[in-house]
Image (cartoon, rainbow, N blue to C red; front, side):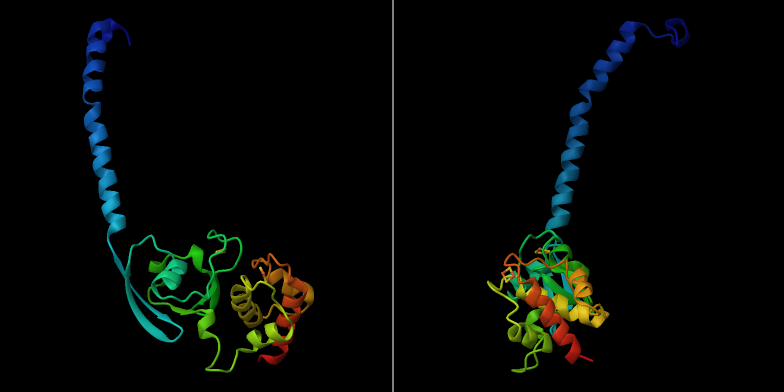
Amino acid sequence: MSERETGLSRRDLLRGGAAAAASAPLAYATGADAATRDDERFDALVRVHVEINGIEHQIELEPRVTLLDMLRERLELTGTKKGCNRGECGACTVHMDGRRVNACLVLAAAADGRRITTIEGLAEGSRLHPVQQAFIDHDAFQCGFCTCGQIMSAVGCIAEGHTGSNAEIREWMSGNICRCSAYPQIAAAVAAAAEEMP
Ligand code: FES
Ligand code: FES
């Protein structure tokens, strides 16, 4: 549009721009307020009602806390290991409503109303779960750091019916990394446990 059509001179437009720039700090202040509100929102506690290994818990925590940190830091269930903390190693595998999940990828708040099983809840009293026993019988660990996650994953793998062959077991256990490379023994233990379990 030409100057004649708008009725505004170049000088008028520049003055308008300067006025807009002067109001910019107000926009920044609004952004800062929003950030403060976000901080408050994340600092507010959420209440989580969850069953863990057959015991009911009511826990208040920040919404950003993961299921893994809740188990380890709040409930001292340290059998669930923190390896990569980003869903790559499987060391933190637990069961949520009977399905295996990486606890480092699940917010504790998302476990509200759910049933969680950790390695501490697998044995029945002094009687080991068949998968735990099979890992011992087949010497399926060295340093042991990955072992709790491997066992929890193996229980899920067997329940899902993915134990038809050594290759199938390895495929469906591939989310669990073993730095000691005890894979042949782990696969053998899973196969043996699958034979015993209904
Ligand atoms: S710690 Fe969760 S997958 Fe590695
Ligand atoms: S036994 Fe050491 S990482 Fe698996």
